[in-house]
Length: 316
Image (cartoon, rainbow, N blue to C red; front, top):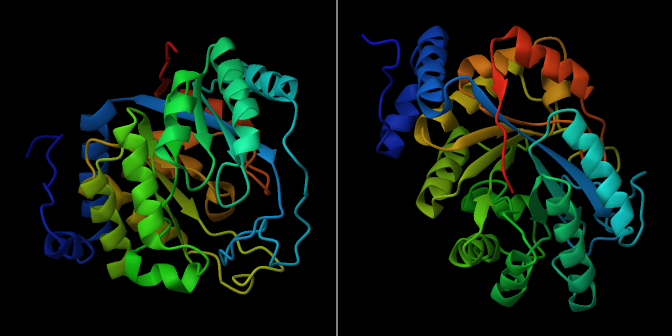
């Protein structure tokens, strides 16, 4: 068998069968698929929370929901200069993409101009501009693309079946439609989920195939970090071995896509984050997250160098 051989997963049944094979074999398949996708090249991104808290939605995991009593900060849109400063810091530590993130259901018309200016500011620093702005209309997405937006990020979070357990104030279909509109607008799309919320393996497989059907470009894998005050505060941390199987599963169902490890990485993998590279991950969110701290970017860069990997460079 070639060192780059791995099974091509065509059905839900074949995906379920992956969960029955020995861990070492599964990891080997996923590692081969990851190398076939991008070799030793990794894609790094960073984010800034440009508007925090006060969200009207009831997502059970979210520290920024106004329905939860958390210590999350609440503030309106920040100045463009703050975005530029954050971009320059992120570029200095190796990020190639930079994402502006707002809390809330979606884009407010009165904020669209300032958000477009932020997108332009990101591009001017030499980073690829990304945005996470909630449920968005086609017109808003086109305007952001005209301002220089390269990629829109909007997670499906979980399967359609499990979504009602996570959120009741908007529908799974609305999320799918936002992803489809972003693609139709000519934007690259980043969409994934959060794992450890109580979903089953069937839910995980359903999500993987939903993302494959939508043909997204990047799939962020987030591990739930239970936040006091949210409805998921009592959820246990995801087991490390289970987390690795999740990454391997998504790599094999989506062999040609970026599998990007994001929230919860430093909590579920506090001592051996490089293990994620051995199951096909080829992208990372570096720096801090929205409401929780991440790993030191210098530690991540050392991990990348020592593992024989290199950082992808982008031209905006």
